[in-house]
Image 1: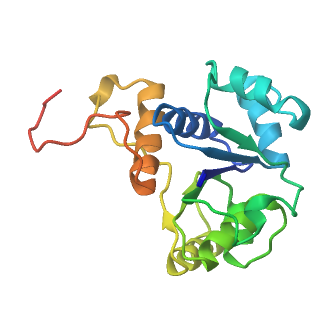
Image 2: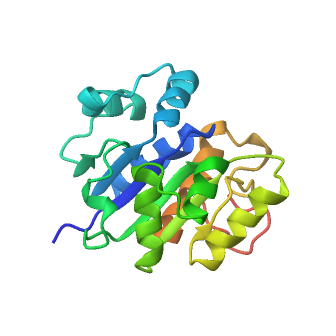
Length: 207
C-alpha cells in the first residue's frame, strides 16, 4: 500500500527549506503528496521567480527544485480541494511536514480551523496520532505564536524551527548548507535517511 509523506508548503518566507526537504524525500525514494497553499505560491514566485500552478504543477515543481523528477512518486493536491485524500483519516500516510510553516498556518492547525487542505491534513494527522513536523520560520514571535506552538506540541507535533546549526561547515557555511541542515533535521524527525549534513561526532574542529 502506498503510504506517502505529505508535504505542506505554507506562505511563510523560507521556500528553499521546502525545496530541500522535497529533494531529500525524492533521493530517499519516498512517496510524496504535495499541498502548496495559495499564499505559498506567491512566496515561491517572490523568492525564486518561479510560478506554481495546479494545471502545470509537475513542470513548475521541476523548475522550482532545479532537477528532473525522473520516476519520483509524487502526487499533487490543490490546496482548495477539501475532498482530497489527505483530508480523511482513512487515507494512508506515514506522516506530514509543514515547511515552512507560517504563523497563520500554525494557528489554523492548532485550533482546528481547517481553512484549506494543508490545515485539514495536518489536523487529521494529529487526531490520528501520526507524525507531524511543523517548521515555523518567523522572528520575533508574539505570545500568541508561542501559545499556538505549545498547543501543537501538546497535540503531538514536532515543532522544529528553521534554526540551522553551524558545526557542519563553520563560518564558511553556504546558504544552501544551512538550508540543508534544517531539511536534514526535518528528515530525521520523519525517520527518513539522508546525508544532508555532517553529524556531530564529539570532536571539535572535525570536518
